[in-house]
Length: 310
Image (cartoon, rainbow, N blue to C red; front, side, top):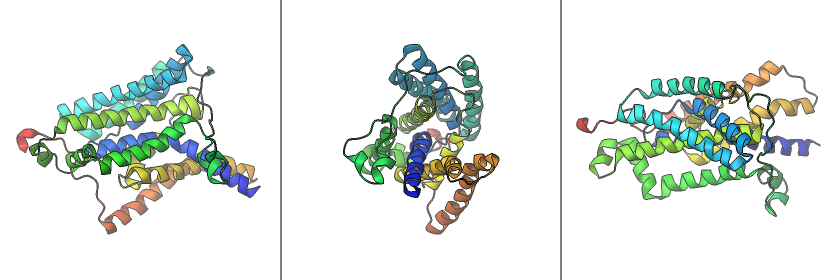
């Protein structure tokens, strides 16, 4: 009984952590290029409502997912224009987009609350792998978007650390002036990374409304965008560590349901705040460790680039 409960907790932790993983991967790419995006929460919400709305109209969850990705990318394009072209403050721009995305999603989703969704992402066990004890039920009995999350971790890591494109991205995030002098188009790299990050944030939002809990509720991200931003620091800007971190936060998020199955009575208010308490504690621990190991954020993170000041 305890073994099956632990497997169930690990499996549901993966599911709960997937939207955070998508958003965190996008934020890692954006920050590696030197652009801080605090609008992740708003982009996730816009992605969630857009994906739900298009899926309901077309009865096709893949079209809904595509629409959510486009919506997240368009939100990110606004952030890119403000911070890269106009060199606006990245923190202010990100916060403004979160507020804008929250309001816009609430407005667009007014008539969608409580409506059922027919087309959703269902679990697709992977033959062979899903039958491995412990590992199979935990990792390989999920829907296709979870598997895309696995793939995304590997692709992002490979691109960042094993390709010329990744080298250019990291160079732009560390020293955009030197990268520009070497012939790298700093503005194109930053635009591409910010938009890619927004697209993944929209995808994370769509996962909530199309797979995790197929429905639309106002503010349904419930702060997951902010956890994703914090997870980037926890992962020290490394996609593989982001996967482990998202799993951890996912397990904490669903812990209350499993405690109830064990007959342990815990205040629902405490359980709801637990993921955010864990986020704060983990950030404190990681911040201390990164100082000891001299692990720093990209040097140009949050600093607008001006070619005339090179």
